Image (cartoon, rainbow, N blue to C red):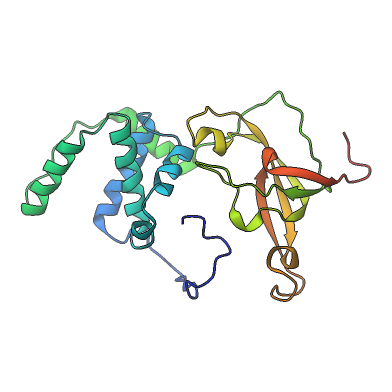
Length: 232
């Protein structure tokens, strides 16, 4: 259900011109918890996303962005033994009955604050080296594999089976299909491919002279035609 790219029937996207980073005070706590749990080794970014993907579809579609984050934090906390579900239920019921009670206090961690400042300011790179030679060059025509892998993947449904052209090579990065399913980082080469609108949506539906770009890890791609003159 989370793979909504290219799906219709949800109405127009009414994106505001400006939007605050948080709509409610509690969302700030969720954002801090996500970084703290990431720092504590509860999950990586890919397994965190997979935790959201495991949500019940109806719950996923009827809850907010930071509620999705809370679901993944709880999922990993419970499944890895960091959270006792009975204790979580007991404390939840307590604060539902006594919302004015003070929250538990914790000692400040300078190392955690330094980490959060660095990640929020500069982000965290997923680029990793690999000894594997890259298979594709800019100009190659490739087909995105029409596969339906189980578990976490960044292979969006709307590009599966489509043909595009490699327009950029980005380097080698953590492979989400491995890291998101607890199989290690397994770095893979990453490319940007360009796909014509007609190829994606059909010529009778696509706007003329439009295209989309998609970042694809090498295992997602098969060669259709190699660009002449490209170094090998």
